[in-house]
Length: 585
Image (cartoon, rainbow, N blue to C red; front, top):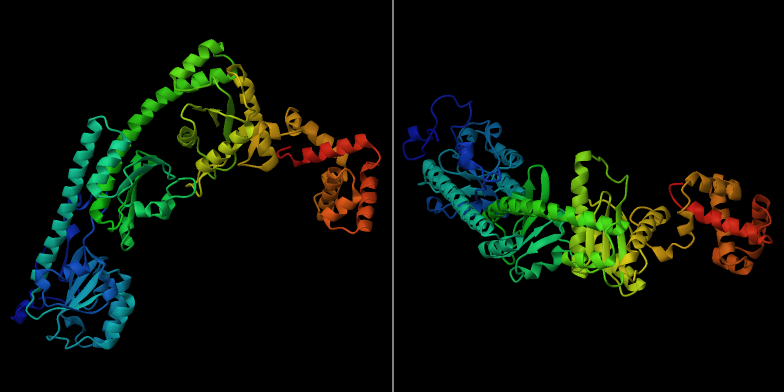
C-alpha cells in the first residue's frame, strides 16, 4: 500500500517529505490487488461500501457529517490522501479523500472550487481534519457540497489517517470476500441442480430460495421461459409485464448498473453463450432492495442457465428437425394416408383428427436495418420458439413447425370466427409491446378444415392469406382466407405486370398521376361504385354539395368513359381500383 503520512502528534509524521508538486502521497484502493482478485466471475468490478457505512466504522467514531447528506449512498471503493495542491489529476471515481487542508492553508477560498472539481471526478466523499492548517470550512464550500450531494466529514483530532486506511480497506475487502463466497456457494448449488438433471424451472426455484425473491428466466425480449413461485415479490410482478405477458426487459438496467438506482427492486443479467444471447435471468426482490451480492449470484446463475439452455436447444434442434420434416410432408400431402398420419401425429403430441385451421406467420422482408447471413438462423429460431410458447398456452395439442421464413401452426378450431380471435390474440402475444426489436411478420389463417386430408389445401390458403394481407395492409397484416374476397383471384395472377397494365388501361390518368386532385377523383369514384351510383348518398359521405358531385361525375366520365350507364365498365373500374390497393405491383 505504500508509506502514508501519519497525522499524529509529531508534525514530522504529518506532512510528506520531499516535493509537494508530485502525485499524492498515497492512493490506497481495494482494487489495487492483482486483477484476478478484484474482478468478479462475470468480469465486472466488485462494488465497495456506502459512505454511510464507512462513517459507522470504529475508526471514525466522533466524525461529523457537515454537508452533502444526500450523497451518503455513494460507494467507496478506494481511499486517497490529499497533501498536494494539484490533487484533481490524481483522483479516481469512488474515492474517499482524506486531507488536513495543508495544500490550501493559504487559499481557503479555493475549497469551494475544489468541491466542484472533485464532484466532476465522481469522488465518493471528502474527510477533513481541522485545527492544524484550517480552523473551519468556509460556508461557500459547505453550500457547494450540499448542492452537489458530495459528503463532507470532519474527522476527530485523535484519528490517524493510516488507521482509517487500514480499517476501511479491510471492510471493503471483507465485503468483497463475502460477496464472492456467497456467489461461489450459489454457483455450487446451481451446478448440483444441473448435474441432478434439473432444468430452468429447477434453477429458478433454487435461486428463489437463495435470493429470497421471484426469479425468472426469459428470452432476450422478455418471454418467460421459467419462473419460481411468485409469492416472493409478487406485489411488484404486475408492473413488470405488458398486456401480452412479456416481461419488459427494456425498462430495467443490467447487472451492476442496477445498483446505480437507489433502492432498486429488480435486477437482470444476460444469459450469454459465446456470441449468442439466450435471454435474461431476472430477480424481483420484493420489499428489500437489490444489493451487489444478489447481482453476482445472478451472474453465476446466468452462466449455469446458459449451459441448460444450450443443452435444451441441442435436444430441441434434433426433435424439431424431425417434427418439422414430418409436418412439411404432411402439409405437402406426402406423409401418407390419414389412417397412418393421424396416429403418428398423436405420438408427437399433435391432434389433427378434429376441426382445425392452419396458421402461417411469415417474417416480413426489408425490416432488418443491417441483415447478416449468420444472424438469420437465430432470428428464425427465436421466432419459432416464441410461437411455440404462445401456441402451447392456447392449444397444447397443436402442431407447430418453423420453416425457412415462416412458422406453421395446425390448431383446433370450433368455428372460423373463434379461430380468428384466438389467432389475433396469439399474434399480439408474439409481437409484444416494444418486444426488444422483434421483426414484423404477416399472418394468414385458413378455413376450418374438418378432416386431415384437407391440410395441404389449408396450408395453401393460409400462405395466400398472409401474402395477400401483406399486399393489402402492409407488413404485420393479419388476414383470414375467407375475408380476401376478390383478392383471392387477383393473387392467382402470376404476372404482376399484367395486373399493372390492366389498371393503367382501365383508369388512365387516374392510375398514372399521384397529385391530390387525382387522389380525390379516385376516392369519389370508389364511393360512387360502393353506393351503386347513389349520388345523394355519395354526396353525404364525401360532404360534397350535390352540384359539386355532379361536376366531378362529369369529369370522371370524360376521363374514363360512360361508367354511369355501362355496367361492364363499372365492373372493370371497380376491379382496377381493388388492384390499385395491392402493394408491390
